[in-house]
Length: 427
Image (tube, rainbow, N blue to C red; front, side, top):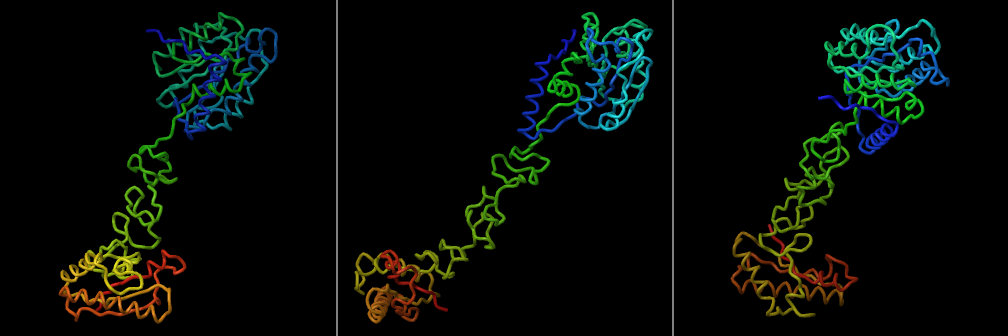
């Protein structure tokens, strides 16, 4: 089946490069070569030193202008390149690894004026002569970009020469930059590109519009490819230091799972995400809680609390005085019996435990009164526990008045916390 002609108009080339450059800027895309080798084949026959319909510069001058700009746009992606002219067939540079500077020096030396009369156009011969340089080039896909007005008046016909060359070198494509102002010659150049899945474009379009030229270079030489992000975390593989992050996991700029508290356990697995720096944690990111009272060891001021004990914010076995006694009273309320019975149960299950029953008060009233009240309340709790069968030798009652507040006495809430009874394990 005959392949569709790949002719790019000025508008289509402009749109191609606009969207390609936009995508590259947004996604930090990279350039990937579409070909391995390229040959710039430049027609220097007499008709190329004429002008298009009497204008200026000459066709050769137009081609040189395009080549100068084009050389600035070709990315250095390890192509093997050649610049060749005809007639006569002459290799100006290459085959060599393309570098912009050395090719620029050769292009700058291209003539824009030359012999017109008697300098006939063997376009087909120029194409056949490409076989000599192709056999010296590495295997791979080769782009041949012809700068010509398409005129031919000597030797084999261009299209026949093209077909013969491709019998031996099938992995080539011809891209034609037309300098012609005649439809017959344009048709020849267009058909050369059509037969090889190449691109045909008007030289005047490339010369007058930089974006069109950028689009042409892109279509011939490279494609824009989004960088790989194998684990889909939004960080490309080239900079991803944790390339196998599970899908959906939040990561930092280096592609590694976030660990906000720096405890070595990533956020998605961290059940205690606000652990202070330097505090050891378990596999779930939580600090140890040796006595399993819900207060981690680094905060626990009473780390040996028996299992099941009610504790306060600092991990101490603590009972609110307001739950045990009426205001200014040391007599245990009936409603407090279930709470004290829990204490009895814990002590029964742990016969080795001895406790000091500590009474505390807020700063309301005099210091002497608060001391007396705290002692009386501690004694009442001890008497209750003894009455329930706990040996007196395991218990000691002591009052501390208002000397050890656990909260500010400036507020009612703070004073309520300070009115308490604590049970502290004794050695």
